[in-house]
Length: 124
Image (cartoon, rainbow, N blue to C red):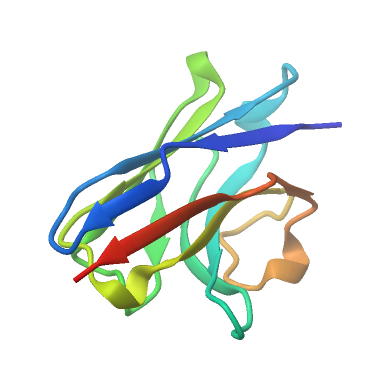
């Protein structure tokens, strides 16, 4: 069992660069592919980014590619999402998630463990 706790959200001005963190409990963090998803009001939850177990491979949604960076520190059981050049349309609840899949996945159905989410609101 893995428990995930996100932090780092809040109210940010457009163009800002906050960093989200997600700390995992347990000793098996390095065995999971980790992902970030987001859900805006009235919209479906969507994939943002994912990172492989050793951090060597990453994947991004087109909407955030070149602006967001996902990374992880397995010694700290933590995955990060550096968000740059934020836009009002990035406003959403951001969730981190863990997957036992063998490859990076963009579908939420492949992620078994989820955090409670952290709100990011971008003001224009």
